[in-house]
Image (cartoon, rainbow, N blue to C red; front, top):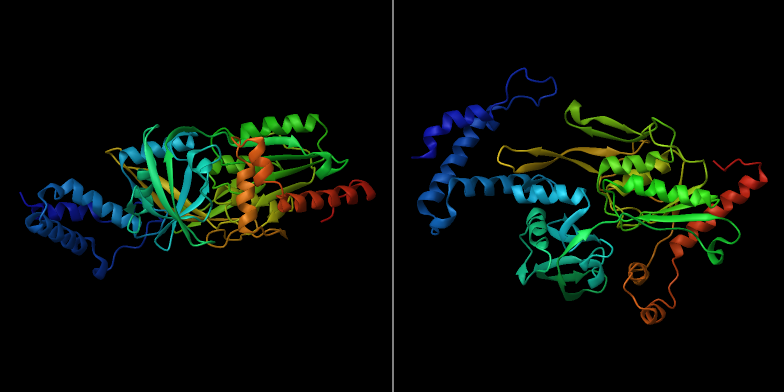
Length: 427
């Protein structure tokens, strides 16, 4: 039975219903009529079913799903059609447990780029770096692979192997990385401590870094801050370098810890009114004392990291130190379909409290402190927990975290100024 017999019904289903919502898009013009476009799609599918050489690839479901993949991919790198299995993987990711390599990737100009490898993951231990361009997965070219397809290939059952061939932009080196997938558990708050006297002197400056924002992140950070405050912490460094983002609600809660209740953390603006909203500091969270805060960012800080950094910068609550962030500031809404698949659709863009757009611009630091590629490699290497003392002595003998140094110096200056002016901080 030919699909064209159902054309009128399919076209009717695609028509916008009149008067449903005040913020619905305008009705289609004659040149953009759903009737005409469904007719073209139907004709193309019938031609494929009639003449395509491989009869195993011409089922209506296969063709329609392929059309959906292409349709979403054509919009922007972050919009995707997710098969049911991909949708389940995404939900496991936000719950901070999944099987794979622990590599966050994005798509730029048709290329698959590593945003950052997650700490203690196979990708991290193998030596993948932010900015690496993935050119092959298990020997197959990634040139025509979309972001959704890449994620599907990177993830898999723990214990299975995968080889990534990457081009490293800084050196133009092409290298293979063979890794074994693991069931990854993400601990998002790490290295919470008071910095040593060799760096902080006689001042008690706390430090913690967030590897990504997932469901328990705010609770984890709150516990660490409680411990540091009991030790007399006078200032705090929040390290968001190489943090690729995660859950928006988690990022908003982290920023809200340092802001007065109901302070705007971020806003979103889209084509329809329902996508324009304000995200504010949760009044239920215990607000921290008004000690000085510095936030470390670099070009591997994306999405939720940029929400936190932009909010604390625009409200004059923190000094930002490092380099301009990645610039991933668009909102993806998840819309589940009846068969268990889903659309991941870009519906709005994020803005900081000062209405600065994040997407494709990033958040600029207050104090610019660039790092060379070799310094960034050393920083990532220093975070590896599996290094022996001999490796640390050999590979990190001359490494110094200059961005952390600049942040600590800035906080020392604020504390000295406050002491001399009776507690007031410079504006």
